[in-house]
Length: 448
Ligand code: PMP
Image 1 (cartoon, rainbow, N blue to C red):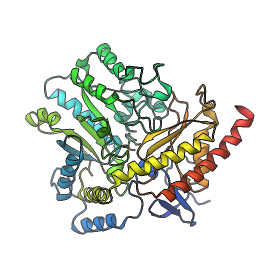
Image 2 (tube, rainbow, N blue to C red):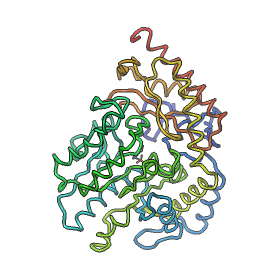
Image 3 (cartoon, rainbow, N blue to C red):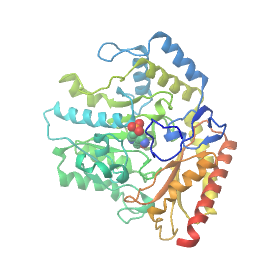
C-alpha cells in the first residue's frame, strides 16, 4: 500500500477518501453514499454543498481573504459580531473570534480570569466544571473537562480544577430521582464553592446539554436557573459552552434560551459555520467587558486567523441561511420526529437503556442490563462496533462512550437540520440493523 502522511485518529485504520457531499449525504471516491447522521462532529448543521455558502465564499475571496486583527477590522467581522449579539440571550455581547471550540472555551476562561484581575481580585483563577464534561482538547480546555479518556495521557500537565456533580438523571451520581431530588446536583456547586472559597474561583463552565462526554444529557428542569443564581450569589462568572448546542441545533439559536438564562460568556464553534470554514467565538457580556474596558483595554489572547474576513463572511452566510430556511423550528419539529422513531426502535432492543436529547441533538445509551443499568464491559467496544457497522452500511453516528468514569456506551445522532422525514426513516433503518447485528454478536455468549 502507498505510504500515507496524514496522521489520522487511528493509524492502522483505513479511512475512505471523501469525494463530495450534497445535503445530508457524503460520497466517497468509490461512489459509496453515507447518510451524515451526526453532521460529522455535530457540525454540518445546514448539510453539505450548499451553493449560497459557496457564493458567499467566492464573493469575499474576490475582495480580501485575510487581514491581521491587530492591523485591520473588516465588515464581515463587525457584522458577524453584531449578528451574534442580536441572536444571543440578552443581546449585549462582544465577540472574540477564534478558530475552534477548544480555543473558544480556553479564551472564555482567560477573559473570566482577566475580568477579576482588572478589579484587583488576583486570587480568582480557578474554573469549576462538571465531572462529565468536554470543553476541548488544548491543555487549558482539557483542564476544565471531565472527559476521562481524553484527559488520561496528560493528567500531569493539567490544572487541578475542581469538578461538581453531573445532572445525569438516568444515572444520578447522587443516587436521587428527579424531580424529588430538589436539584441536589445544582446545589453541589454551592457546596464546592463553600469548600474552595469563592475568592479562588473565576468561573463555572457547563454545556447546556452534555455532548461527547455522555451523549445528549439534558439537565432536569430548573437546573441552570439554580446554577446561575448560585454563580451570582458567589460572584462567579457563568460560561455556557455552546460549542455543540449553539446555533439552532437544539431547537433554539442558543440552548440556554430553553432555560431562560443569560450566560456571562458563551463559547461557540461548530454550528456557527456549519463546517464550511474553521471559525469559533467567545461571546462576552457587556458587564463582563466593563472592567477590561476601564482597565487595561486589551485582552492578551488571539490567533493569527482570529476574525479573518473570509471565515466571518462564511459564518454570516450560514447564519442567514439558517434564518431564511427556518432551521431553528426545523430542528425542533424534525428532532421530535427523529426522537419518536428512535424510541420506537428502542422498544424492540433490550440493550438500549436510554434515548434522550433535545431538538436535533439526540443520543442512545446502551446497557448490558436495562433494570440495573449495568454498562457493557468497556473492553467489548460496543460503541465503536456499532459505529463501525453503521459506517459499513452507509451511516455516520458519533461516539459518546466512556461517560461513566471511563465506561459506558452511547452514540449521538445529530443529522443536518435540513434532513427530511424520509431520510430520517432511512437513517433509523440502518441504525437499527447495525445495533441489532452488533448486539446479537456480543450478547449470546457473554451477557444476557
Ligand atoms: N466544547 C464542546 C461542548 C464540544 O463538543 C467540543 C467539540 N466536540 C469542543 C468544546 C471543542 O471544540 P473543537 O473540537 O472545535 O476544538
